[in-house]
Length: 390
Image (spheres, rainbow, N blue to C red):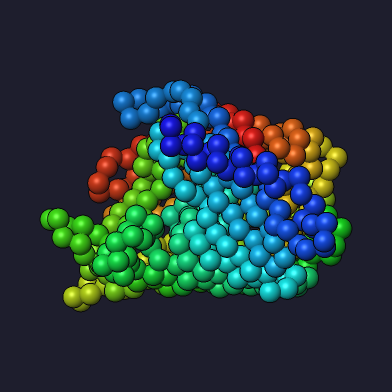
């Protein structure tokens, strides 16, 4: 906690020194502007399951972040210090150059674009992202990304190294052995400015080389590990998961759709992934998907954000109900790999109290089965979250 306190104090001190600046000096010389950023999640959950030895009711603070964002002419930068589950780490840490109003290049550690859920947890209307998305959508990764948007199109292309790269960034021999991935996302939309009715159709694709795997104390780069927890942060329990060895490469794609009219919106994705394998082993193929129906119970309407290709956060004071169904599978009998399957349904009530505070109430029911490494499990729960974001 001392390290977290020290880093946080340094960030806040630097922020206070610049945050009140207008960005222009007395001699008309541009100055950098620095603004504070932060996030705190407070969760509570009660569960219904025959496997009470694996989960327990309770409360948690899944994450607290403190950071700052810098802007200077065409440059932007961000850094976050995160405290989650008694661990401290750097999260968003990137530098961006804005070529013009609609084109930008970003490098650092951030969420790369691959489908609808390529955004922070604060933007996920289902409280926790669907299991299918957890399996295939990369989280924070070290790499570079180009983005373009205009009234009709949103395009992103990026490259990143595997998740363990941040641990080895100061160890050249191991860092140079990291697997890498290429991702792209393309979205066409009909979203007139100021309209509450819009349509968005997109397609994302990805390619990756094998990741680091340790076997008998030896580093081997021939595997892909995929897993997803049950959709709650109070109890951290794996729902499905597997590791595919003897791998050569991975291909994946996901079509996505968003449609909205006034106070009703729909979001959905389908995921396909294939891992090609060595030594005459059959390719491993998986498919998953989810569908989400959103409705605003108050008089406000949905709006669209062209620069990020997603539905914007509802207006302050809005009350929203979200229903979601998800099917996920990591089992391919032809490849003789049983990573398990899961069905999940959820109902979430979101109250956007003001621009900085959101309250969520969520009910979910998830059933997983067929995973070789662990028994199946049915978990239902009611959970609540208070989120502060600035």
